[in-house]
Structures are given as structure tokens and as C-alpha cells.
Length: 120
Image (cartoon, rainbow, N blue to C red):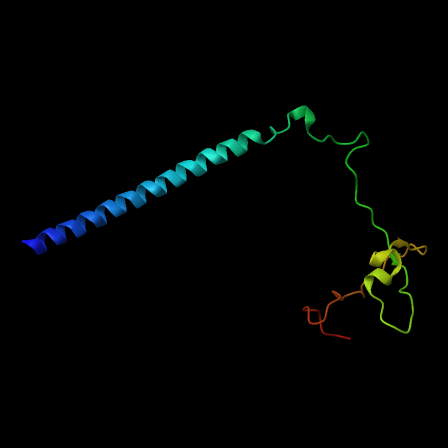
């Protein structure tokens, strides 16, 4: 009779433990939902239609195609680190005065092994 009571008590403790664990999970989910609602209320409202970006007067800005030439790397006897380079490694480029854009060879896709005709 003592063993039966112990088995029933163990099963009851397991059931109560699972019930408590389930209640903790539900409480955590409800808390996360409430916290999310509070955070959402503090965020700014989405912009109204009149606050949306507008197309400029002259219409949409088009693509500019131009050939640019990068400034030459400074020559020195030792390796330069980025902070030793002009403009801290952000070397600017300037428009190419020749205005000629480089083109691929006729009949070539410009890449090795790209399925071209194979003729030279």
C-alpha cells in the first residue's frame, strides 16, 4: 500500500510540474505580446501620403553613363597603410577626358569560357 501511494504521488507531482511549466510558458508569451505592443506604440506613425517622397520637377533622375579614371596610387619604397594614403584610402575618381567607353571585342562576351564561338 505504501508503494501505491508513492507512485500516485510521483504521477501527481509530474502532472503538477507540467502544469506549472505550461503556465510559465503562457505567462512569458503574454508578457512578450504586451511588451511588443508597448514598443509598437512608442514608434512613430507611418508617413502620410503627402509626406512621401515626390518625383522632382524635371521628372525622374536618369542613369549617367561615363567613363571615370581613378587617381594613380602613390609610389614609394615601403608598403602604404590606408591611413598613409591620400584621402585616407578613399581615392577619388575623375571623368575621363577621352569620353570613350571601353568596349568588348565583337563576337566575344568578355569572359573566359563563357560559351563563345571558340574561334580566334
